[in-house]
Image (cartoon, rainbow, N blue to C red; front, side, top):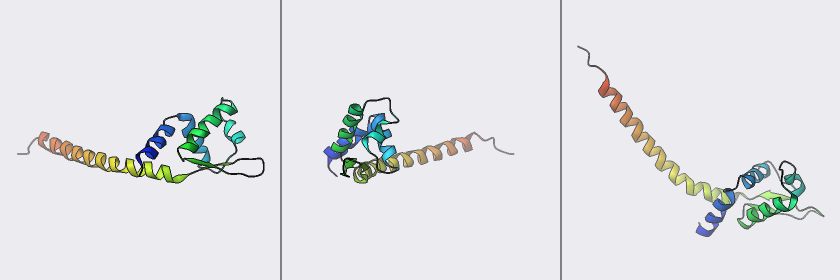
Length: 114
């Protein structure tokens, strides 16, 4: 996995507007006009966000007569997920050790019967 591509993916995902655009595109392709509708941003501002997403490889744009529908591209997101998955496994192991320690401490605090 290329570091530059991963960096571009996370940089693009850092912006909440771009994440919202990706969430919308996860439901299906959309034109720029359709993507502008839910935001209080101008069409040029949304277009700038789309360029960042496109440069990161997170979306692609097609040609359909006069329209240029945008589609989500899954590969960069899958690569980011794969990278994050390593850390999820690490944290799960840490939480399991913490759970074990807490159970051990609870057992030590219980009064002995007798």
